[in-house]
Image (cartoon, rainbow, N blue to C red):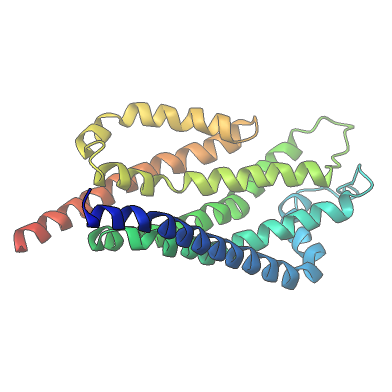
Length: 254
């Protein structure tokens, strides 16, 4: 065994320890950022939860209201939502920490490709959540309230409401990442654009199946998720073609 090989072996434990220490430091920074934002928001947790309830409250008829069926839920539910908001708002920072940890192991060309995708994924997730709140929630809650049987007073439990809207936030946020997933599949050579275009009928059907699995069991929210998912898939095909063309132009110049 050469001296160089011995040196590489001797350096491995130190390298692993340094990476673990860096990972620990970055995780602490992420937790600290979330904690700070949570503490800043905590005096406003009731206002934040009122904002979350607004799409449903606007659909209630006079005399209807939301209820709390558990003793601690008037405090715990706004508390949990405020913590989720803190995670949501600090997403750019803790994703940057993840990126800063893995970036040194990437080639320069990979960094140039990954950076815009990272930024785009954050923006698209936010857009998906905002789309759910401002477009989907009013339509879904209006539909539910109109079809309530006569003599039934709609009084939704705040904990069940929180679970319901959180699932929709997550579903639409993830669904809006479809262009990123499509671009990655094409960029890595896993599948060609031509093949993805051939899969359009299956993707269209899959969007409705996923909409059924990711959203509550009603046709309105399923459709409101499935249609944007397919349009985002088409957007992913469009931008994938642009990326490939840009790569070909760069190779030609070289």
